[in-house]
Length: 244
Image 1 (cartoon, rainbow, N blue to C red):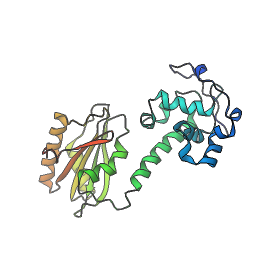
Image 2: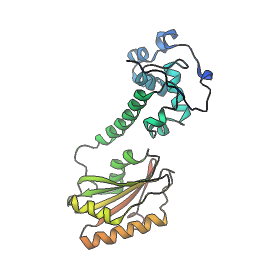
Image 3: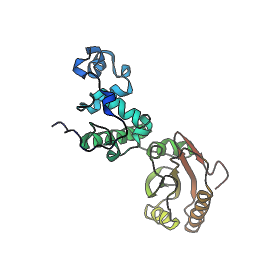
Image 4: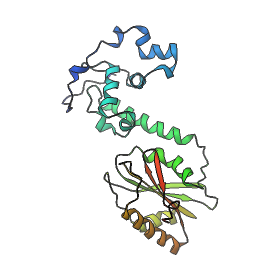
């Protein structure tokens, strides 16, 4: 069943500016599905690929213009991928089912990137940690703190989200971090959080928290191997900077 047109959209652009001919009115070589069949997926633009996922547009815009508007309105694919399904509904033609579908696809793409590393994950360097956790943290619009559990061979045995908060900070209790480490029988742990601003510079609060958790770990015999800050496509390692 096709989605009904979304009512009461609160949006700061005039959708009438985006009216174009329907997809059926386009030449076959301009239609996304036919173009993919004939020339391959790599020949399609970002908007055309997104249009195939959306399938249909709305009364205001055809599906390609709907896809193009999504990308433009949110400032590109990376920022679009950060949005949850409720936020995506601001665009005319993106009702509940389509918005949920998009959020699921964005999450699937992140998991696919991680899956390329294999089933057994060994973390012996900041680069190893960033390769695995960056897809999970880099696109979040709010600060989130993870603790990862490692065995004696430095294999990842699991991880746990400790907290998530605003765009600049989140509250973390060292006691909860160590409780999770003990429950998961970790031989050592790795701390990770993201900076939605894209700034890799650690704050005084970051340094203080890391020291508190590290001290708690020493008492329990569970050392902190590193604290990684993910900021977009970059990261910083506390151990590499001599902060741990």
